[in-house]
Image 1: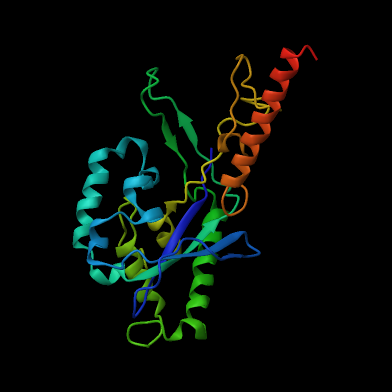
Image 2 (image 1 turned 90 degrees about the vertical axis):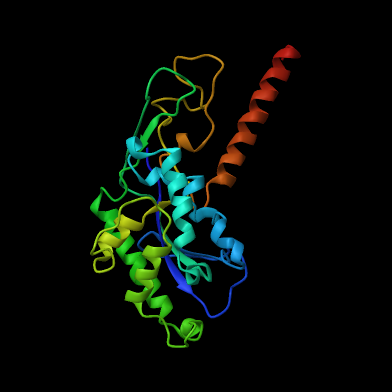
Length: 265
């Protein structure tokens, strides 16, 4: 299995930007996607709310080892958010996501109880090329922050000093990974300490190994798998359209086969 690692750089602004999710994507030659998300802090209540794709409460537990994941850990994070500085909630994030990660992990059944979740480990940045691409992405964001378009967005009109932005990003980051003293001194360490998921998990039910070309589970009758687990690589900026297309294709295909059998064709 694999997951596309994502790291975010917090961008403070003099006034709250409008709320938006991914609208524009920059695709680099190194296979790093540069995206933006903003508007998490438009009111005092924002400090008490979850922050969309940046929230531990809705998925960022995947960044810590399975044995350390718990509901109590997510609740602790939610409580700790109350002490975050308010400037963290005024601005937006520029994200960098690795397309086609080479680092892979695995899924293991915890027991035979179908009600229990399996243990999943993605081994983010275990392949050195993924880590170097993350560093490339962070440096690309630094170049973006030095452009004229960003020069007057800072609260003091002084532009963005990268070390300060990295420090604020560590404080604003919502994963549950323990931070190191050199997190902002080493971009490699910054990538490792601030990695989060963008929920593009894939693999685990590969075609030819778990399912056949028609996505039927090998050795099992009446069961198909049509989701991201059959991908060897998560497509594009978001796999939802591809998954929906596949679901519709196989749904129509199965329906036609059943209608054909019923009509004796």
